[in-house]
Length: 436
Image (cartoon, rainbow, N blue to C red; front, side, top):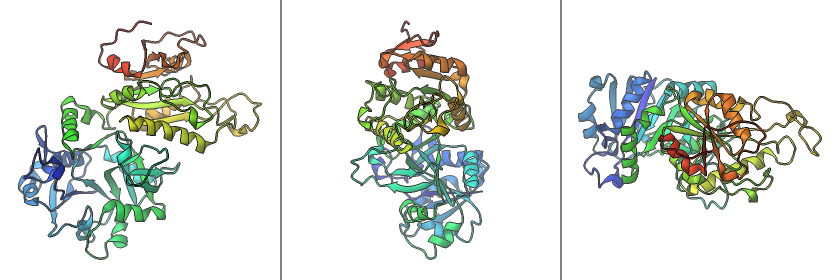
């Protein structure tokens, strides 16, 4: 497979750090961002790479030359005038005959592209974009998907958002079919990949979102630049690659992230627990994933629809995003074993394997994100949550925010007790001293 990197950005927001080099050549610790990208592609068996260059492109050519020093073959497409993020792809229309990887050159990445390519092929996609939540969804374009991971819309950051939204953003990493050349590159000109290609391909129902927890971050501002440098030094960048077993903090929802108010049937009852956002921000900055595991019997009981439940989660994600926090994914059980409720959904009234304290949802998350359960934690506010973690074989943390504590339903003892989610970071650092 061929890799294509668009590397013509000027990097004006990084002028205080480097003003005489293109943005992809900004050094992160000991080498340019672009070199990290090339090494990542090479590790995934991509040895034939085209770099689209423009502003100060000679700096890139002088450094990488033909790529032989880095174990790859590098060719260059040089813009004579700015052609946007994808205009130079026109010059590859007769060269690329199959799928290719397309990456924006100002991103620090460490991705298992083999997984992403498999997803792309399994969905028969024309464009697959790597998507993830981020810490600033309020000023980001958001990806809107259906329940099959198909992209149905792009919610522009310029929209007036007087609604709650799903925190899912386009990272700038793609797997693309050669079919786009006949559709969008009949002649040379300025082209924006997201606005002119992705958005116009969405109606054909062949654009998909590959939700990944891997490290893909824009280092385009001084604050983000220094944050990425720190993540390289601490090993977080490498550790997030899904080819490696992941550590995870599994979290209950009600009473742990949002305040416990019984079974939630009304969106107005969704309110964040104190310090929940702070706790998740700490996890987001660590080597651990954050994944929510929650029972939602209100679906089976006919008291809440799936769309309404989605809106509850959108509100949680919006409230967290407003404070710079997110969780990586959420899995819920819609079942309930007891019958006799007005309006109940009969096919969901079953004794399933995903309702806590059973561990079906944990197994599902484990398989999706290559999670090492033995190095993970389960966090919740009831003994049922603690029993779930024990059943899965992981360490457990009881959080007191739900005000239910050791409710006596299960005769179990957690490994740790904290007052709220902000204290979990002490456990991860080995500095915990809270007594049960």
